[in-house]
Length: 73
Image (cartoon, rainbow, N blue to C red):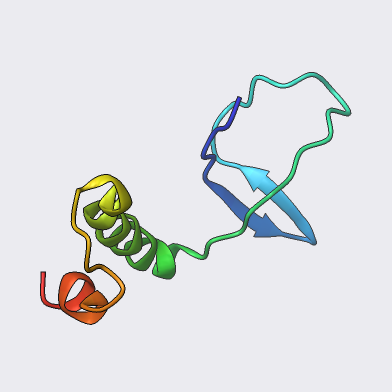
């Protein structure tokens, strides 16, 4: 189960801004993305999704015309 949880960092701890449904002492991995970088993350996801599946597109000259396909759309 992967969730995005908004939290604030105070007094050396991450404090969720909403109730979290996890058992006590459950170990988790945190990926910290400062709020001001969230827009950049969404833009990166959008751009990457535009090229997802290019290897299955039937285009046979992807390596030769890489920059054209990636940067010129």
